Each structure stands twice: as C-alpha cells, then as structure tokens.
Image (cartoon, rainbow, N blue to C red):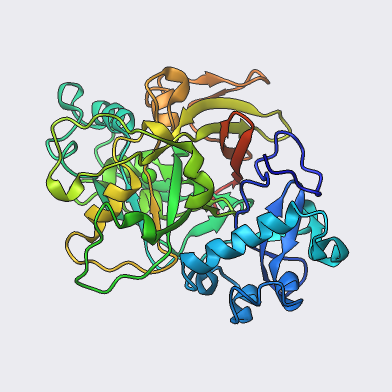
Length: 412
Ligand code: CA
C-alpha cells in the first residue's frame, strides 16, 4: 500500500496509483500537470526546481500547450517522471512539501485538450453494439456483416472537432430523409445521440511502410481517456451508404482532460472474450489485453438532477487495442504521437449496459424516463451528457474523471 501525505478522498479517481497527465492553465501560460485527489500538481513548477534533472534535461516539454513533446520523450522517460511523482508524494521528506505554489485545487485550473490530435480513427469493436445497430439499420437476421469477426472494423474520423470536457456543443444541422418523405430535408438533427467510448493515444511514431505487431503494440500506446463520439442518427442513416459515417459524426466529439497511462491500468488487465472463428495470425495475441474499466453515462437536464442511464464496462470489447493498432498499421499506414484511436460504442449484454440512446431506446421507440418526469428518446437542447470511468480492485482505484458536454440549440 502506498500512502500519500496529500489528503486524497477515499473514492477519488486520482489516487496515488494513478498519476495521469494533462494540460492545465490558470492564466495564459499552459503547463503539464498531474492530479492527485482534489489537487492539480503543476509539473512545470516542479521541473523548474530541478526535480526531474536526473530523468530528463529537456524541461521545455513541461510548458507546452500539448502533451505531444512530453510523450515524445518516450515511455522510458515519462514512466520515470510518473514514478518519481508517485514516490515523492508518498515521501514524508519530499521537497514538494515546501512547494505549495505547485499545487492548486482542481476547480481553479482550466483543463485543455491534452494532445494535439493529428489523426483520429474510430473503431466499431463492441460485438453487442455492432449487433444492436446492425439489427436496427440493416437486417435483424444478419446483424453482423461477414467481415466483422475477422477484422476490427473502423473508419477515419475528424480530428479538428474533438473538444475537451466542458466544451458546449451546438446541435448540428444536416440532411435527413424522413421515412415518409419523398425528398430529403435540411435542418437541426432530431436524433442527437452520445456514444460511450474510450480512446487511446499513440505514444510513439511509426514510419510509413512499417507495421506494429500485437506484441509490440503496447509500446506505442501512451494512455487512455474517456471519449464521447457525438452522433446525429437521422443524418447517419441517410448519408452512411456506401462509404460510412461522415457529417453525422464529425461535428463534435468530447474527450476527458486526463490521459491515464497504460502502466497505471496494468493491475486491471483481464482476458478478452473468446474470438470465434480464429483470427488471422497478424491479429492473434497472447496475454491479457482487455481492461476492467467501469463506465457510466449520465444525462442531466437543464436545472435537473443527474440520471445514470447506462452502466457498461470496457472489458466487453471484442477487439482489443493491440489488435486495433496491429490492424491499423498492417498496410504500412503510419501513426504519430497524439493520434487518437477510439473503441467504438461500448455496449454490454444487458439493457442497462447499452452505450447509446439509439440502443437504449430502441431507435427512439422506447423513451427512457428521467427523475424529473421528463422522457428522452434522444438528447435535447439544454441536456448535459457526462461519461465517467474508473477501475477498482481491492484497495486500488484508478479513474478517468469525466467528460461532459452541454448541448446548445443549433446555430441560426
Ligand atoms: Ca463512434
């Protein structure tokens, strides 16, 4: 057991075992930071005291607008930074005890998008989600298309509209075709939806032409964050044939501000589901590559209370991150530090574990009732959608905090 001299609330996601990384600011100057309990620790202030001098001489990485230069130091360095912070926060004689100016209550720190995301890829790796959506959008008897169990299906998304938690999102407009109408119409989406996802951040560049094996993949994954891949279902339904989602997904996606490292998640590894039929050799893997991460979706109407509408778990993923990255690079496509790869909607088997309104309400046919008596088929203006995620085991807790976005009316 590690004990910190910082007081950490019992159920905090940000225990001494976590030590995630993010970008914060209190004025105009951004800094790399971590979070411990309810405190944010400014790592630039810490670096300026010479604290990291035996680990890295490149201190400029701690005062950048994104984590990319820090991540580029490599895992051997960033892991040492994480462990040095962990050690000093448990050391009664820590020099940081005299560094009150390095700590700030988290409410006083503005958090920013933690990485510059060059490319964003969205997978479709939950078998429950793919089955549910296949039934609704296509054929109930052949919900999974023939390729699904042979490769992690994905598409290239839009990186420019990924926003940090707390950023409001305007209801998007688009082209839809009402069921009974002869011609399509244009206007605000009537079927705005969240997608409960997790994303992983690439931590090491590859060269074009190179492929990353499932065995090497973890070297290329810096860490994970919560991800809400906002979706307009009516736009999606009309536009997606034959090339897949386009404007129904590109208007916004929300990301939590803290990147939890793969090392912090190590105690929470679990085996993945059996894959039948056997996958091709380049997608085979050994070891436990899934993670037991509890997930929740909360809808909070304007001036209302929180309503937990879904409880899912990342461990349900059929395709794991190592397989996703091996597949992504099997053709020689290069990846860069900061690229984001999202899981796809994470649904479980039960009605309570579905990761989108599309599934929870059966395409809007069975609205859910909120605690204030209102019902929701899809997300309304004024609603805030929050995703939370955490790992818990015996006395260990490592969490992601949350990602939330409030929906504002469509711009006129
Ligand atoms: Ca998605």
